[in-house]
Amino acid sequence: MTGAGTDRTRPEITGGPAIILVRPQLAVNIGMCARAMANFGLSDLRLVNPREGWPRTGALRKGAYAAAAGAVHLLEGAKLYDTLEEAVADLSFVWATTARERGQGKRILPPGVAMAETAQADAAGERRGIMYGPERTGLDNDEIAIADALITFPVNPAYASLNLAQAVLLTGYEWFRASQGEVLPFAQVERSPPASREMVLSFFDYFENALEENGFFRPEGKRPVMQRNLRNIFHRMGMTEQDVRTLRGAIVRLVEGPRKEAQTRKRKRAPKIDVDKPEE
Amino acid sequence: MTGAGTDRTRPEITGGPAIILVRPQLAVNIGMCARAMANFGLSDLRLVNPREGWPRTGALRKGAYAAAAGAVHLLEGAKLYDTLEEAVADLSFVWATTARERGQGKRILPPGVAMAETAQADAAGERRGIMYGPERTGLDNDEIAIADALITFPVNPAYASLNLAQAVLLTGYEWFRASQGEVLPFAQVERSPPASREMVLSFFDYFENALEENGFFRPEGKRPVMQRNLRNIFHRMGMTEQDVRTLRGAIVRLVEGPRKEAQTRKRKRAPKIDVDKPEE
Image (cartoon, rainbow over all chains, first blue to last red; front, side, top):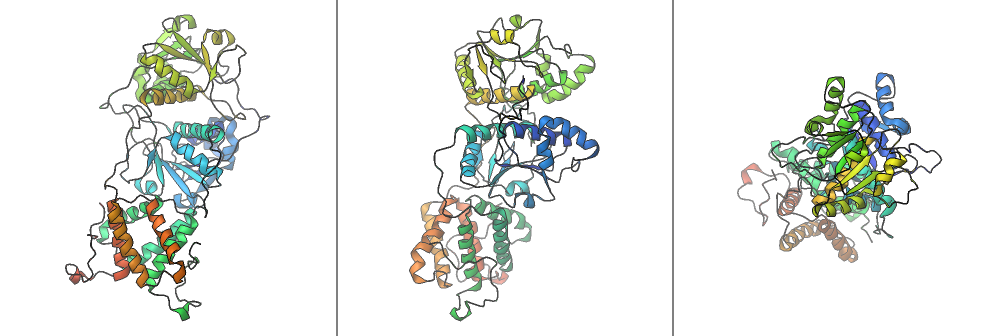
């Protein structure tokens, strides 16, 4: 039903949330996702551990590039990661798409609402991403645990299976509607920028180490679920950089006890981030 | 990103506008359209003069049926017409999808608005249809002339080409939202009820006392703002009862140090709330 196709004389719309394909199975599907992204002005494609490898050369290239149609520039510019943590490190908020309930107590939104929220955040300079799991299985529970909130699609419950490119298409469509037509005239004023995922993960490291040394994770078998629940609690609040500093400072005090005035300038276990300045 | 797939135990949603594929070129695309229809509860598939013929037998059947995935029943039930006029004879209103202006002075609506209108008409017993042209060229002007109004998709003007199944998917998605009220296939499951304000304030008391004893609130003059910021961080996450117990348990461990196994049953500073049970 097309009839228009690629028109290089018209301004290219770029930006928007990062599209993160986690362990995608087929190179041709990556190409189809690139095409769907181009339709809706998305340009930041990230691949985590694609099963068939990186489709820039050889036999894979042919299928992926054909499926991408005029959007090969997105494949050329895609970034490849070994781990999901690296792929989301520079983002401050990550959506996970899922077709079923995951029992992690996170917000679940339809793509229209999620992309309206994302457009407002984007206009305020915040970087967000959307994760999509492998074609057959979807994201696993540890991958879902990294997400701040979930997106699911309003579909016929008797036939709920969407393929990977269709899921990217529907989120892209809602992103385009929200960002090009439904942006509010002003955004929420943040006193502190949203914390990068790297900062949040470093905070978790410190916090969980302190808890570990104090024997919190008992019995041992419960550790994974306890750790995930704890992380989910903090993800849900969408921490700013200042929030992370404040919480980290609070935990440092609990762990180290009262600050000795004389030692202020030469602490033994100085935290990696300055925690002394409370927010004004 | 699927993971749910076809579930025949759930009620099948049927009805909605007729999906009319006019001179479709590839049998495999017809299969993909059937799949997109099933996702969104559409069941009336009509084919006008498909170029490869009717894909019920032979080599065409294989590709079309594979692309339809679990939606082969839609292919089986599809109706075949020699002319567009016959295909729309029983309908009282027909939309034409197009990616470009057609100079025929008809209303042009985005799919969301068009499907909201269609859902109202459908509820009133009116039968409507949506026409999609061939993959490469779209509908010709005589076919557009048959339509009551046009649907076009909000897309990146530099890359406006949607394939046939994507166009069906987006109209289907908007049909489902309009007719079903954006019902998601599942909702957030709360394993724990939201914490009462009393419970939250008791947690703050405990937390802030522990911080006070450890000299966190320095300098003294900053105490009110530090306390307020800390409370705001926790308020923002909308804690459940289980969240409060988990966080309180974490702080108890940081304050009291490793749990002595012998003392488990007779702690001196037993917290007011049971914190030993991690969330399952």
